[in-house]
Image 1 (cartoon, one colour):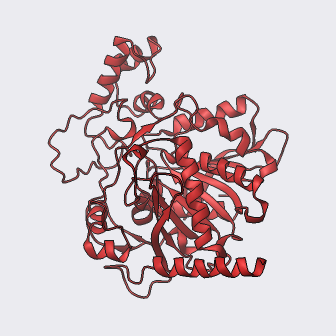
Image 2 (cartoon, rainbow, N blue to C red):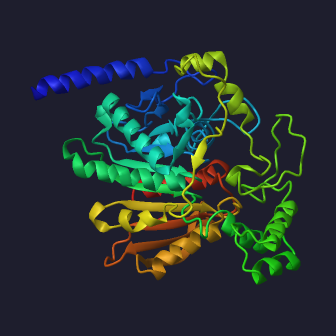
Image 3 (tube, rainbow, N blue to C red):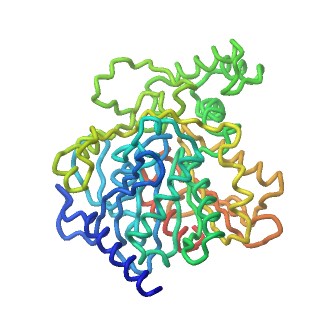
Length: 450
């Protein structure tokens, strides 16, 4: 009976693989050293939600190399940004539809899987319009179901070491999905996922100190505000969520002073998208979270490419869908009380054997490094973790790539959590400093000291 079931699953897997195989990547160079798949994972009992995935096999040894799931943030932004602008094998610039080979692609040594999630984002399918309403828990549950469906189609990867990674709002997506995987494994030992750890870059974690609540400090220490603005902010005990007129007015002044500065990297040039945007004085508001600043890092080339008819056909995109866009305006309910900080004491518990790494481009105003350092220090203050190797430089090509510090969970001397900065770059640090980003990644999956 078991042999029959195994054979049936294998036959189904081979069918899924063949139907999702991308036989030719339009405009890509020939003789690529990897195989690409693109297809849909229909979620059961969800009124039609389907997650679109893209998968690149490792260029080294797919049979034994780790498998990494990558998630971009938003909430509501496509992980094809990661696949085709950040850490995938073929990438675009921000403005040109010219496909380039990425010499620092993460699939040099790992097979890379990308989910466009939540459903309705990018080329994923929302199904019933009611599915536009979603939240962190629903996203994690859907991503787990999608992951299990993917493993049914690609069972040969189930024994491989598995990691979950992502950036920005994936600071919520990644820990919540990791927790759901651990919960699944506890109840399903025969089909448990071989999860080894998680990796987050410039990720929202604790809204009390992250993102908007770190913005004022970031702006002050980067010389963007004057004493009048800073003193008013501090003397009135303002926070990003303050409703007092003086705090709201001061926050407006801060964002006015930030106009035309690249929100995702204050030292990078602001490149405006060619989408008929006329106003250069748009303000970042709490209602729009991380998407309200003028978009200085457009993906014009990628957007054009993914909407080419031959690309849609090659990638098996559902013909009923409209144009691909970078982000989707979902009715997403953000849990500002929980964030994902509440999961760290659980995920770092030695019983699970996970290794975590958090990296931060240190010129990012969206999720500033100062906020990340604060919530990590709060974990230290509460006795959840303790320092095992102090703050120090890490070196690449005889230059300081950034800083690094290691932690161990309470009651242990074995480190399982590393925080790294990537010096002189911002939110999409692995896109803008690819050698440093690859070094950060490869030392993580191989368990090396950076």
